[in-house]
Image 1: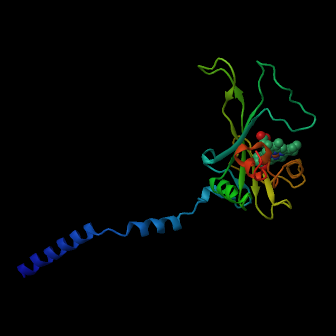
Image 2 (image 1 turned 60 degrees about the vertical axis):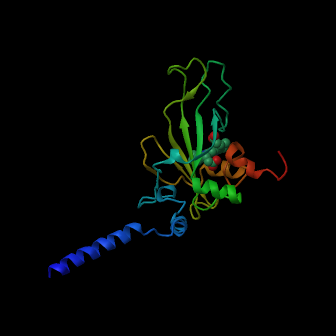
Image 3 (image 1 turned 120 degrees about the horizontal axis):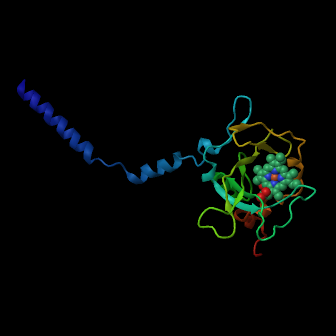
Length: 209
Ligand code: HEC
């Protein structure tokens, strides 16, 4: 019996040694990983509350920033005039979209279903050290979202507006001016691609500069 005990210990040790030296085919393992990885993590897809309010994405600042503007005004009558050198230049706008939707647009020139554009606004500031002149962005916030999803509106897109504390927002009514201006004044699929350097080069005819 004592021999049997020693024998089983030896068998276990041998099994551990075999297991420790076993290396899976690393190429096959990494291919399997690539197939499994979804480029669209859940928080990069539109998510809704039970009463169909669009939830504010939690990590939108890590999305692709496709363009920025400052003091851009598009309401009539135009209230904004170009600033004198010491005047505020107006609000900074940043436009973000999900990395997977960005890649898809770069590949195809079209926005895939589920694309979300975020318009974030930042007030201009000029007084933190060591600033001596010019303007930088103060504390801003996510202000609006433009979502491409069938069934929201006849355009195939829906608009949502967020207050500073809002974690979710309801769909803006289809009669709002958001829908008409974005339908009539944009150069591509209801999005102001003409203002976004990281997108608009895809619209140029081939060979032109
Ligand atoms: C008179 C035209 C006009 C109206 C009305 C308008 N927008 Fe826009 N929108 C623009 C322009 C121009 C831009 C370009 C980006 C910027 O502001 O820096 C833009 C950009 C956006 C973007 C960034 C993504 C995109 O589609 O280009 C969002 C989101 C957005 N607007 C939401 C709204 C919402 C919500 C409303 C309604 C409450 C609205 N807009 C009304 C002209 C308009």
